[in-house]
Image (cartoon, rainbow, N blue to C red):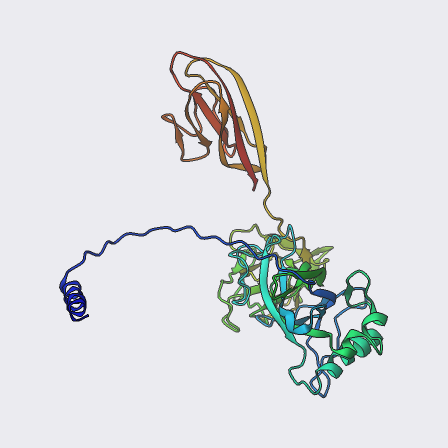
Length: 469
């Protein structure tokens, strides 16, 4: 025993004194698992709904939404950086007992085929995907018991779904097959027996999240990895709204027949005398303007003054005349976009006797514009026969699309250089837009292929993926 101890001590000492090399490498190790299918009964989501977080005097949910039509509808705040808080709720049961329930979760997805644009900023809680819009997952939240107070939990759940919602907002929830108010609210029903309970979670919709239909899935999972789910859509109602940082436009000293411009800027700062507008609704918006004649009057039937305006310094000015119907200005405001507004005046005649100054009223309004749509990817497959040795071929994307990827699918002989025909690319020593077989006309793009010069011809199958602009 003593000898063994000595050997161990000496070995430990040797290891502690040795200088082992440290390798600065990164090793990727694959991992995996197989879900235990479990046994027993899966949990059931009997009914689910979304609602406002408005509460009564006892701090209990009222079970309301913002429209009388079936399902949940919510109005945005139409205020800058003021979000809309909603609650997602469900009645969940488990035949193996509520103690078998591991968790209840809600996944919310952005509306499909609606792009949010470059100015939209996600909330920090909206961490379900790297992007926003276009049907991707907004976030997942865990639902908790409606009430953690054991003494009132049952009564609170029954009061919410069986009394407030059933009586005042009966078409709010969506039901799983075979369930209804009569079933869950019965005197001997599962809510009364506490073999089913109400779960809820609150979440925020951004003031700038797009109007549309949001897919929501509630999923209940038990300790045996079994799960049940129920899904529906709630509607974020459209609201077109804007705010400006100015209450007047002062043209200053104006000369006759001189186009006098007042420029805005991109900084939203009240009273800085540089007109700025920002979109605070959940739709895209076009600005409209209407103006009186500022007391400058008419000569015959022609007004002595005309105006023009625009949104953004890169837009074309739009002329509008006094008292005419509101004129739409160029350049649409995307979701949460801030942009400058530029205005100008051109006076052809001052009335006699001329006044020292003139004033009037400008009216600004906005109209909704359809959302941006999500880009779609179209694959075009091409089989090119009859290649001569070292010959070239290619295919173009349709108008309104851009080639983003492509490749070789098969060939009867080796293939030479091939790649995207897009600006700033070179394939086989030839730079876009000029290739031996074809010259592209910008913005036309596509995919080009050369047979490998090896003394043989070829039949080549290739594809090009085209993304909508």
